[in-house]
Length: 58
Image (cartoon, rainbow, N blue to C red):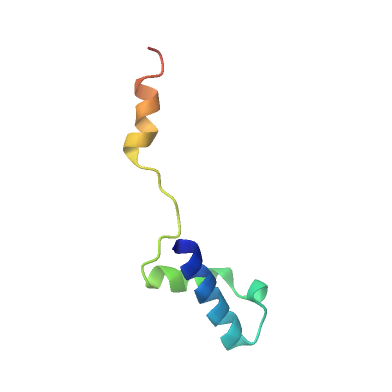
């Protein structure tokens, strides 16, 4: 869903600007997505990142 939302927003921006989608401003795209509540970064949960450390030397 995240990828589809980004692709749709990028396509709309490109059409409005009369440019190829590769030419749109990626910072503007990111800002538009964040404004609409999109998740733009993967942040691993603490549980997943800590568990391997807890059981490393057993």
